[in-house]
Image 1 (cartoon, rainbow, N blue to C red):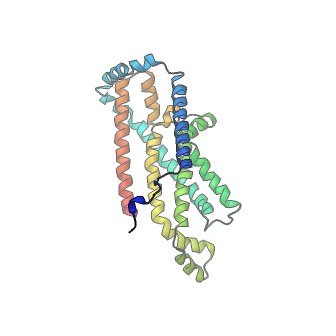
Image 2 (image 1 turned 90 degrees about the horizontal axis):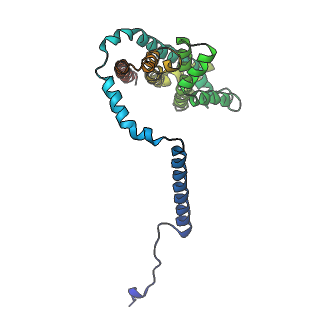
Image 3 (image 1 turned 135 degrees about the vertical axis):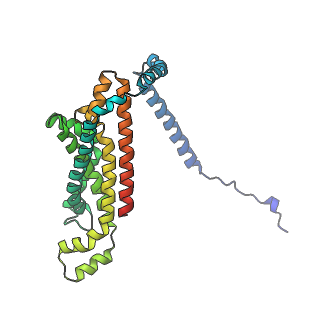
Length: 271
């Protein structure tokens, strides 16, 4: 008989010695980085203000209620401006994003070596800069007003719409494209009859979703002089009219909820 107890079995380990050492080194540098970031954060922190923050927040909260309901009559025009900024900016962004998306898609670009990298660069550049930064630059170039907000929203929307749209173009059914091309159709006819019908639901869903996002972003562009509700918010904050600030928050909340409802209904209808 074989003496099972006499067998020598090596202890099984989930990680080898080198892997465990690498994990300990990783944890060490993570702790060191955390300590460094904490020290960097506290370097210019005035803890007297931090300890007083709850009292200050309670004081501001008391001043914010009740909301200045009569102030809502002064918000209809800024609200209309905000909706126009979001809508017109979205339209501009979508119009520019459509050709950029076709140039960026690997199956529709005329040149993968030259044209596609340029289109991808446009998409990345648009998505890398926040709409608030675009607004800051445009206010300095164009001047304060609604036009700066509209162009800022449009420039920000190009990358978002073009990225999702070119991904939808690359995921189309190739068999439909080959079937239309086999009839002798030109390149434009292939796009019109084989590609566009496949991406049209995604296009409408992306556009409406971006409009919903732009509604929220356009409410704060006025803080840098681009018009809309943000301009009223800045004025109320500068005069410490906290009950007016509350009313602006209520209007923004209702507007965002309404845009979310409209966006959801449209996406359900087209998808």
